[in-house]
Length: 143
Image (cartoon, rainbow, N blue to C red; front, top):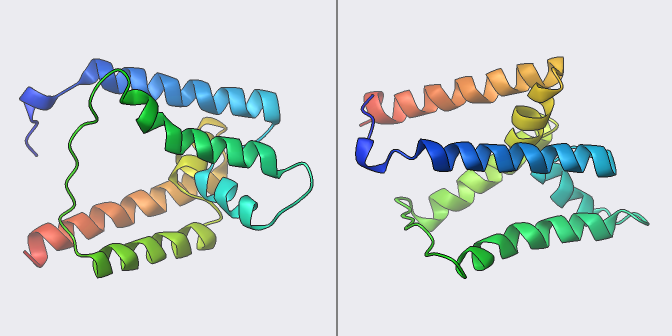
């Protein structure tokens, strides 16, 4: 592994991590809810009384944050090195995986691990392990 020291941003990364932790803690303390994106989005598809407004506000905030950032600075450049069919297949597989694992990386990896949930520990170890294995296969065996 090689570290790109020109683009290494430990302070920005620390600030981002602290903001994520603060947001997760506030969501748990104020609403008693876990900040798992897949659960929040799927809850919007199953409308329940009194449950839609906070979910919609959360998703709107996620979508509005980059636009708010543009008031202060440029967004970092992004590059996708995959075709639309590959991206579509990847999205469907991620959606299937979050349903199969009863949550996503934000729900299990951030919220579940901080609560020492055994289910979240197992889920996080599983998706991290398969992620490592996928990168290894794609870069070293199929390259």
